[in-house]
Image (cartoon, rainbow, N blue to C red; front, side, top):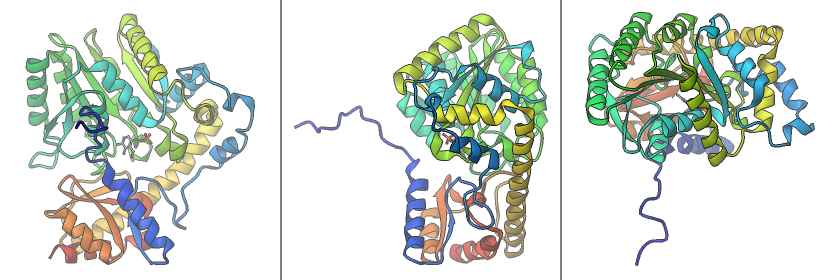
Length: 406
Ligand code: PLP
C-alpha cells in the first residue's frame, strides 16, 4: 500500500544538525553539566546572555498597539522600505538604479522568494562546496537542484575558475544562471571576498548576460559583523546591472538586530530597468501572499523604527561595533591557540563562525561532546560558533579539537 506521506514530500536535507546539536547542548546545560555550546548562530555577550540592543528592546516593549496586530502591507510598506534602504545602502546612491524591497520572514523567506521566482523548475543553482546547509533545503522546496563550485583554490582564495566553469555549464544546460554568494563573513568559514574577486566575478557575469539571463544573489546575513565597509561591493553591483543581469540581496534582521525569533528580513531587488523591477515586485509579492500571506507586523515595526532615524541607526551601529569587536577577540584567541597546537582552519576574516577541516567530523564531534564541547560537524569539517561562546570558554577548545583528532 502507498505510504501516507506523498512520494513527492520534501525532506530536510542537511540543515537539521545545527538545531539538533544545540538542543542537546541546551538539555545538557539544564541538567547542570558545565558545557561549551559552540553550535548555534546566535550572538551571546560575555555574560552568556543573548546580545541585545537597547533601542530594539524599547521598540519591542511598545509593540502592543493595533499596527502590530493587524494584517500589514504585503511588502512591509514605505517606511519599512525606506528604513532598510537607509540601513543597508547608507552611503550608496541607490537612485541610479531601479530597486524594490519586500519584507520577509528572515533571510530564509527572502531566499525562498528569490529561488522560486528566478529559476526554472529543475534548474541547478550554483552554490559553494562549503556553505550554510539550509540553502539546499530551500532550493529543493523550490523544485531546484544544486551545482557546487569549489569555494577555495590552493591559495585559499575564491576558486573563480571553478565558479566560472559552473556558470558556463548552467548557461549551456539551462540557458540561464543563478549564482548564490554569502558575503561578507561567509557561514561557515568567516571568509570575505576581496574587492578584486568581486570585480572579476561581476565582470564575468555581466559578459555572460549578453547571451543569457543571469541572477546574482548575495546573502548578506552577516553584513554588519564585517570589519570593512561593503559600499564598494554594492557600487560595483549597481554599476554593472544590465537588462539581462539582476542582483538580489537577502537581508536578515535576525543577525543584525539579534531578533532571531521575530522573523524579520527582506529581499532587495536591484535592476537597471523599470520592467525588470516591476516583474520582481509582482512575482515576489505574489509569492509572499501564497506562502505566508503577509510579513509579521511586529518584525516590520521593529525594523522600520530601528532604522528610520539617523540617530537610532548611529546608536545601533555603535552597539554593533562593540559586538563585532567581541567576536574578533574571540576569533583571535581561538586562532592563536590553533596556531600553537597546529590546528588548521579555513581562512577567517570576521563573522560568527570558523571552520576547521576535519576527516571523520561526526566521530570527532561525538568525542568532543563527551568532553562537554558542542561543535557542529558540517562541510567536511567542524563549525565553531564564536557567536555563542564567551572569551573564557574559547580557551582550550582548539587544544581539545586537536586532541580529539588524534
Ligand atoms: N543566511 C545565512 C548564511 C545564515 O547563516 C542564516 C541563519 O543562520 C540565514 C541566512 C537565515 O537567517 P534568518 O532567516 O533568521 O534571517
